[in-house]
Amino acid sequence: MSGLLKLMPVLFLALFIFSASGQFIASINCGASDVVHDLNLITWTPDNTLISNGDARKVPSINSLSTVLDTLRVFTSRKKNCYSIPVTQGDKVLVRASFNYGNYDGLSNPPTFDLHFDGNFWAMVKTTIRGVVMSEITYVAKGDVISVCVAQTRPGQFPFISALEVRRLDSKIYRELDNNRALLLSSRVSFGATENLRYPYDTYDRIWGYPAALLDTVVRNDLSSVDTTKAPNNPPSEVFQTAITTDNSSEFGILLATVTPDNPIYANMYFSEVSSLSFSKRVSRIYYLGPRSDTDRWLTLPFSPPYGSVLVQYLYNYTVNTTRQIYMCRTQDYYLQPLINAMELFQISEVLTDGTNSNDVIALSLLQSKFDVLRGWSGDPCLPAPYSWDWLNCSNDATPRVISL
Ligand SMILES: *[C@@H]1O[C@H](CO)[C@@H](O)[C@H](O)[C@H]1NC(C)=O
Ligand SMILES: *[C@@H]1O[C@H](CO)[C@@H](O)[C@H](O)[C@H]1NC(C)=O
Ligand SMILES: *[C@@H]1O[C@H](CO)[C@@H](O)[C@H](O)[C@H]1NC(C)=O
Ligand SMILES: *[C@@H]1O[C@H](CO)[C@@H](O)[C@H](O)[C@H]1NC(C)=O
Image (cartoon, rainbow, N blue to C red; front, side, top):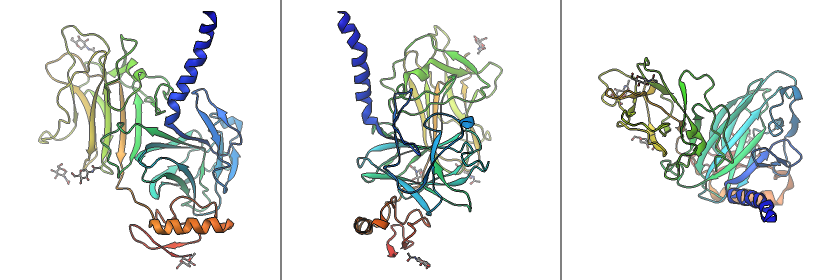
């Protein structure tokens, strides 16, 4: 009996790691030389076998954030430098890139540069003197390799990268997303939480942060566990341990988001009632603040968060033509102010490129296999324009051709 008891924890751990390994496509610790296992049970591999260009650097210990974020790879040559990661075509991938400048070069000059994925523009990365900058994107892989590139855009500002993570999401997660667009994460928060939550609590290693300054009232769930099995997007049950509400003097309820006209948004809002309510019910709806004459001021029907389980409200492809604030408020005839447990806010990208003409891509890789000097170039050869590989020129078509070498 005692032998069995001793075995159990080991067995559990092994099952745990095994069942999750499918989600972990890559955890790359850029600029590192050794494998690192972190406190979240994530195994990080160094990047020296994945990329030949760039220099490994380390931030001074005074600016240390974590073992993984303290090393980086900086690129002082080439228009763009790319990491290529094998996936399965059709995988829904979550890709997260982290940048910790930490004054590694002693110049107190955090660079700004561009980030690309699979030949698409992803983001302009503005690094800061202190702290990490992260970008996260989710999309369906069109091929069996994905690429993430950094590209220099300003003289003397050399792109670098500290960590690159690729996770596989179940295809049912964010099911509203079509296969030809990407979701760019704006925020993912667990209201009332006091620390970040990620793997192993979140199966897919999504990071649930918390708002820095909270004006609202935090409330705790009576229940130690909430049934999330039927909830869309498989949120971790831990995010339902806390929620925020607002006091009765609040006229508008809770401010959920400020939306600008730049891109359509996708918002997922997660609700679970925190106490069993006998006769008064909490009924809320989501609306935007606008002129009274606006007919589509209400964005949802009235709803009540269920006790012990989860309700998700979402807005997909919501666009505004002037900056608007989205609120949640109680409906008039009920006492209790609204509550919300968690929220994810994304921008929906433009239609993604299919990349450079596929015959040209095949011809180039044959060429690369014959000439050593051409190896080490990866990512899309032409896209996004004008960030082609340095040794070729491309046409300006939507599906570009290589026109000269
Ligand atoms: C708001 O007022 C109602 C009725 O007076 C009360 O039951 C409720 O607890 C109040 N809510 C808050 C958040 O103060
Ligand atoms: C959003 O809606 C507009 C107008 O209906 C449509 O043209 C566009 O393709 C939609 N975008 C997405 C991401 O579904
Ligand atoms: C903004 O969109 C609304 C409908 O969604 C439309 O009635 C209004 O004319 C638009 N305003 C501008 C300035 O385009
Ligand atoms: C690409 O085009 C530019 C401008 O026409 C030219 O100067 C350069 O030599 C070309 N590069 C290659 C690799 O053909």
